Structure formats: structure tokens, C-alpha cells
Length: 200
Image 1 (cartoon, rainbow, N blue to C red):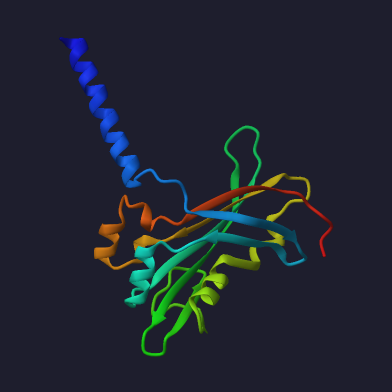
Image 2 (image 1 turned 90 degrees about the vertical axis):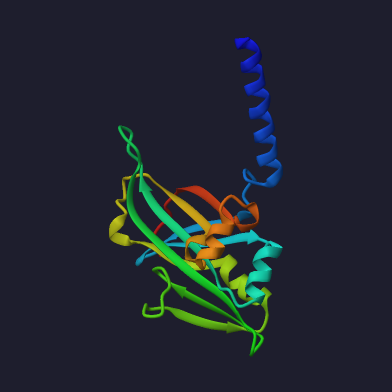
């Protein structure tokens, strides 16, 4: 009887897992870090990256209805420690809000080092097409992620880079609907060992 019960539970668990996989709850990341380059300058450490992704139809539809989408790029400089976890020595983020303006038929991209609000410091730019606006999100050039003083010449470092769609900044009904749905998942990450060249 016990063996029969265990077998029934195993079959039920297999059914639940297959259903979740089919629904996309465990879907793979929908973005890829195609390029990632680090450069040490006199001012500090700068990062350039290219992230490839396509907008799922549900996100395209929300944008067309005037709902802004929020993206976040994050970089952490980690110093190697043989006796413990690597030590974070510098962390920075770039927050991006993409929105469509139906009256002008133009796209607007706002960037900020902190979560975007109406009162915070941010930089905005308008685009004639969605493709141009997305290209500005997907290409990060000469982004300063650490000060020169954060880097010791004899230490070893690596950089964690992460990119994602930030559903936590969406309106509440969209946040609830996005939980567990792969259509609302855009994320990618890469870890790179920092190899020093002579400062420029």
C-alpha cells in the first residue's frame, strides 16, 4: 500500500512538473549577453556590452497601450578571496524606462543610476522607431562601473554583469500577471575575469 502511494505521488509530481515546463514557468532566459568588454582607464573601470533579446508579444502590446517597461543593467566588481566568498568592492546600476507616446508616435527612453521616479535625476531621449530605442537599451558603451581607487594592482578581480526586465516597477495588475509567466522574463548575465592592461 505504501509503495503504491509513493508511486502515485511520484506520478503526480511528474505531471505537475511537465505542466509547469509546458506553461513556461521554468523557461530559459530570453536574452543573451553577446559581447562584454572591460577597460581600465585613468578614471576607473569601464564596461561595454551588447545584450540581444526580442520583446515578447505581450510586452509589445503593453507598450503600444502606453504602459512603460523598465530595464536594469547591473555590474558588480568582485575581488578574489581564497578563504571566503569574493568581496564586492564596487556596484553600480543603470535603470532604463522605455515608453511609447501614442499622440506623437515616438518612443522615449529615460536612463538613471537609480530607480526612475518623477523627482529623480534622469536623462531622456526620443526616438522615431522602437528599433532605435531598443538598440540604445541593448548597447552599453563606456559605462563607468568602478573608480580607479577601487582597484589594487596586485589583486585579482572579476565582474558580474546582469541585465533584466524589472517587473517590480510595473503597475500592480501587471506585476501580478507577470509572476511565473515566461513572456514577462527578459534576463541575462555574464561573469568575466578582469585582466589588466596598462592604464590609458
